[in-house]
Image (cartoon, rainbow over all chains, first blue to last red):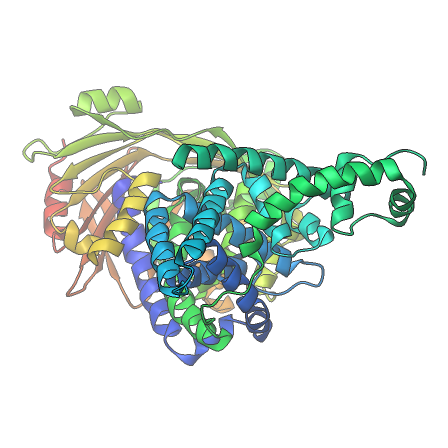
Length: 204
Length: 394
């Protein structure tokens, strides 16, 4: 309020002191108190499906783990204490889908993902059918790229449904009416096919 | 149900998501079943392409226990620090929080306030007082509580004049014209930059229920806000200010600067004290004005605010009783981490705050003269230089 010098002083003088204390406190046992047992149980319950969702989406295990941790950190920020009516599973899947799509959109990560996907495909391909495996991986790569370029709501819908989520859970996660899922899904699938055809014609 | 199902319903039928009435129609309707075959062909294509989303991966999963350990190490242990900084770094909080500080710590009423009836009381800064605060209480601003406080402030404030980006000017004449008051600068010391920050004004409407809920959430349900604060409107008008930089200084504060500052710390591990060790900034601003309903007992709110930061109830009561709340700007400093003293500066009594540190010593000098608040701050051992600057003002 009083200009730069005050702000400079405010930030450095006050907050560095606080931060120092916070860092100290975070290293002792007291920091565990901040993470309630309830949050920990939620973490244990949902970790595997969220991590695997990322693994299928971004392929790279390290990237999948980073994104999954970020997803749970966002849950901790927004909903540190589990609430009865809160759809934790839906919320986590929605955030995870968004983060995965953002990751695929990122050029550098996409480049990294493509290299990783190609490498993994070659390593895992049976000796007698390398081309079939590679073709399948290539199809998956196109599918991910199409998801990343679609309208985010449509991408979310496709990912959540084709990951096996029921309509009522999708509706809850995306704040939609359950009866609207069918029509929206059909529209999203048509758009997906259209974009997929355009992308593969372009790339092949 | 006689009406045929639409394409969306037929798509839902493929997933077994029809209601009973729709299902009965579908099972008895050849036309709908025929149409669904076409839709199924289209859907199957997409399902094949996205089958990888539901197949088991060959990669071994990171176990929940390992992930939980990493979550604590990587996210909770380290990310909350930037979160705390982000809370203070947002432009909104940086402008509005000081206003709230005035609301809670500065503005109160004279003993004759009962006579003032429903007239608005007006606060203007005439002097500065330091209050040592134990900021460990402010850890409550971490994480979700901090986010909720930030949200409450956002919801409660109506901006009347938004801040704009700082403007760099060539000299004090230009600064005076732009800021609307007479800007002073030392004549014998060359500055590296003169910047004018636009004023800001807003109205803050207190929502007692939400504010009390946040106190409760922060574990301070012992602090009870008075009933009469609910719905009170407090107007804050912060005039344009001018900062004059000497040495290598950060850009005038705004959001991008705050973000850059955090990036710089993150990328170089260099504190501002090291990066800007020769920086001194002289800032000047006409007194902000705060007006509030006479029925609002700000002294009580100040007491609650001080207790929230870690003061005992007795300390807070004692402090609030010694302050002329109509004219005093309160500057909180970290208890046991900084010292302060009153000194004569620019012909009036000012306050010099110093925080000794081998790594990044810091200082700030405050004084008020002719309705203008002056501050000189820096990161280094340059407090004597600050006094030179202050005493050489024309």
